[in-house]
Length: 171
Image (tube, rainbow, N blue to C red; front, side, top):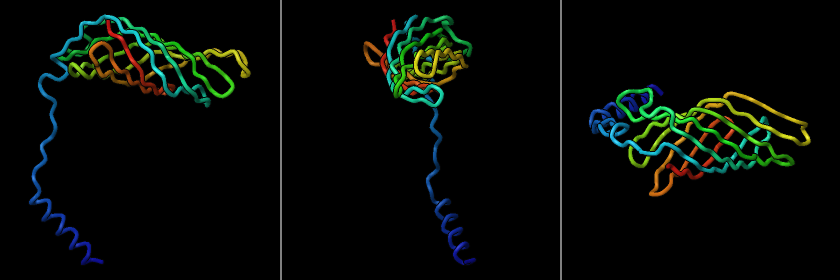
C-alpha cells in the first residue's frame, strides 16, 4: 500500500512539473465599464416555477421598472439601480396564488449583450381559496441576468420563490 501511494505521488509530481502553466481568465478592461444602455424603463413577462409555502406550480409574472439611480453606487463600473414591481399568478394544484413584489434591481452591465442583476425588497402572496383568505409579506432577494437581442432582452431570474425565464423590453 505504501509503495502505491509513493508511486502515485511521484506520478503527480512529475506530471505537475511538465504541465503547462494555467493563465487565469481576466475580464477585459472594457467589461462593466464601457457600455452604457440608454433605457430608463423596462417592462416584461416571465414564466416558470413558482413556490408559495410548500405549494409549487407554474408562474406567470409581469414586471415594470424605472431607473432611479443612473450611475449606481459603485464608481468606475456601469451599475444603474431600478425600482421594480412584479405581479402575477402561480397556478398550483387546486389553488391560484397571486404573487407580488416591490424591490430594487441593481444591474451590472457587463457588455452590450450581458447584464447581471441582484434584487432586494419585499414580496408576498394573496389567495382566496380552500386555504382561506391569505395575505403574506416576506423579504425578497434574488439574482438574474439579461441577454440583449436587437429589440428585446431575454430575462432569467432566480429567487427563493421564483425560477423564471422570459422577455423584457427596455425603453
